[in-house]
Amino acid sequence: MKMIRLSKRLMLRLKSAESVVAFTGAGISAESGVPTFRGADGIWAKMRPEELASMAGFLKNPDLVWQWYAHRKRVIADVEPNAGHRALVDMERLFPHVTVITQNIDNLHRRAGSSIVHELHGNIERNYCMKCGTTYANEAVLAAAGVPLCDACGGTIRPDVVWFGEMLPEEEWDRSLRAAQSADLFFSIGTSSVVYPAASLPLTAKMQGAYLVEINPEPTPLTGRADEFLQGPAGDILPMICTCAEQERRAMT
Ligand code: BV8
Ligand code: ZN
Image (cartoon, rainbow, N blue to C red; front, top):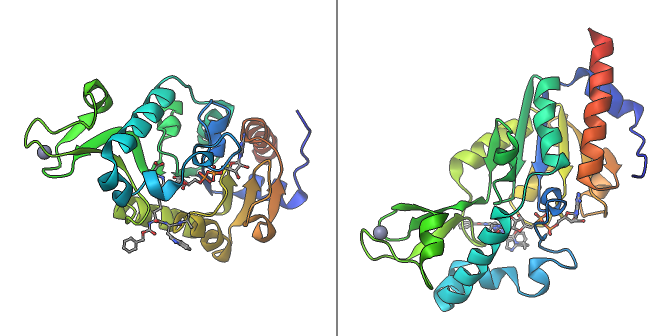
């Protein structure tokens, strides 16, 4: 594991921070075995997001879209949270307020034990009828051959995720915006920062005075605006940040 040096400014923020936000994308789940979107082996390498993760795509070919979500549901059911997810849980021991804002639909932050998780793009473990709203767990929809239909009204069931062109869940968005606006320290972790409005949150936080740290093995459109860029895998860097924060904050007591 490549040693990463944290700047004096970050050490000072780790010592004094009250409210910390961790904003995550597919990269934090890569080390669990969940393919990213735009990575080389990424899902999108083979298909265009708009085609599958959109109402137009679903109406055009519901079978293909359901096969794709059924595949991702099975992949995600077989993986476990990794050291990166666990480090964000550990942060709750070190800082008074820790908020996870995620673009991931894989439920791994909840499974790791994070207390406050705002899912901006939904959750692949939830499904609902587009006609009457009845909700369904994965067991029920994965048992169906082809496109699952609602027992109550015969309507078509869809995964409870946000498709391109769809609004984000209002409450999750409002809470995420408030958390970003009151953060002392904002980590942008494992995201290519290209999908909006989610990608606007890091700069919203910075404009409100947060110290903005990006964690990613590759630079992104955000890198030039971040206060600090820690280049490497989240599963290595986040536990290291927890160790440093513990030392800095212990020195305080
Ligand atoms: C909306 C759920 C409005 C479904 C998802 C032009 C300009 C700006 C915006 C737009 C535009 N044209 C269209 C838009 C809007 C569009 C958008 O932003 N498009 C982009 C592509 C330009 N946004 C929308 O449509 C949003 N809705 O705008 O509604 C509206 C207004 C009025 C009325 C009605 C509507 C909805 C967007 C949500 C779509 N749903 N997911 C599903 O998953 O199936 S988006 C999905 O893709 C993810 O949730 C995530 O947000 C995104 C993928 O990005 P990342 O998670 O960052 O993953 P990626 O693979 O790209 O990057 C991984 C990174 O990790 C890499 O940088 C890699 O280096 C790094 N990494 C790899 N390994 C590691 C690592 N990092 C750390 N550790 C490692 N080990
Ligand atoms: Zn129904």
